[in-house]
Length: 377
Image (cartoon, rainbow, N blue to C red; front, side):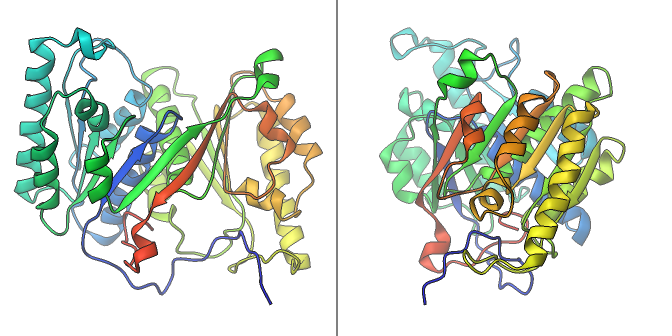
């Protein structure tokens, strides 16, 4: 009998890989840099819990000082919470430019960033190196693609490399162990009705929950620099056990920002199969929704992450209409982030101001490569 399940398998008792992989997040949709930051947070959280020093380098091309970017607040939160584990280098000018507008400065800044990257990769100091916006740098011709590919192919075995940005060249995709494309979807209803602050991340590719964690970091960063009131709620469905991919990351957030991060989870410690839902699955899903609905209405949280709500609705553990109504009535300054894959898009997708579908083009797990603690779980 064929069983169709969308639930999340626990990460406990899982064999692990040691070898670092090369990740590429590209596409026109939102979530690329934030997905990388989610992996960074997970790696740091694991290091805190295990006593390891999982240092991370955030190397940001095309993002020079003088302009604010979406992920600045998230990085500020990371640096304040874990100053001894995060290094950041920014290169490039602060404005967008096309290929025909490239200057000598742009080439020098790209090369400066790449010199830092090569040294970091060779040093053995970092467990994760994020090469943010490397993809468009290569697409613009600011660096030699062959040199970059050769360096990445010969990286130390244990180092994890994450490259982000639009227009990844084929040569980079060929050596990537993981390739997720963020594809944007546009919903006219949200624009017509002026609905803001609802983001949806779905699809079979990697990056949904990690993008949401990056969003949580972003909210905390705003709170640090502004009014200290940017509280975050992380509500997770279908995750009633332990050992899930976000555990270390959320623990790290709560350790550094205990007054800003609340976390609840519901569900059983087993996959929910379509057509074989149990009474406890319905009870747990409804319990989680009651917490979420109250939080949305309260205005106490500036950011609310509804992790794996999509498969919960797709499995008919929750009705759609109460969710639609709660989202329509949310306070204007509350941001809602909804994640998870689904076969049948629910009605509340039409309310999204941002909707990115993570398309899986390549994943090392499909080749039998074990997952890695601190990166995948």
